[in-house]
Image (cartoon, rainbow over all chains, first blue to last red; front, top):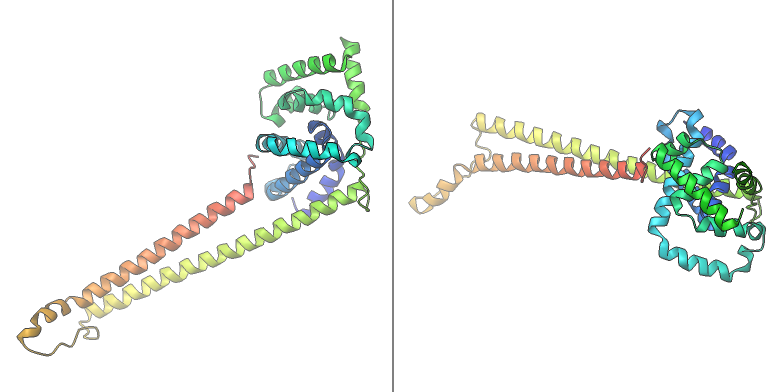
Length: 159
Length: 145
């Protein structure tokens, strides 16, 4: 895959990817965009040997999910600082983020793996098998994560 | 159960956040602009690493060639009985100890030169291997796919 082909494919997918990452990051736009950028640069570095265009979207989501997990592992303290900073900055909360606060708060209470599975299921509409491939887990584990995630979300959001 | 499922699906269907933060070009363009700039930086780093790799390869080739040429020259000198490197020691019995060291000097010098060449070649190969590993690491950069 060459540079132009990569850019064309990313242009078509970036909005959905960022939406997924924004939910995964519970509304933290900066973190979501940082992860999206990092994931896409990683993908670009490996794109020379990647020719399966039909699998491109799933491949990008796999990289994005792994990048998110790595981010969470490595930046817990930084995240706490950033949260305080964004709370102090009203422009971060002024737009659309406000109306999704309940959803973000509910997602924030789910463990990252559960959250990842639920979001891939509802936002991307992937099957259990496809999610298992993306998160590198077994079908049963994903089924369990989905079931728990749904249950938790319904309880938290009182649906 | 089905109704609850629909409610949850409805929540995510309504989740259509906007990203525009007023950076000037429109959100998608901003994002892609930053991404393209980062891709360009990565390409630059890759090009630098490849140039460095070429330099390493070249230095290894030079080292191997130098070692081979030196080995051939010294072996030829030894076999032809050349006096080129033979110490010209004059004197009597007081210098016999020096003459004793001087006789195998050519052989010692030859062995040292060949060893030095081989050592340099091996050290360069080691550096080349390390550079290649570094390049692979940065290429995959946490990628397992």
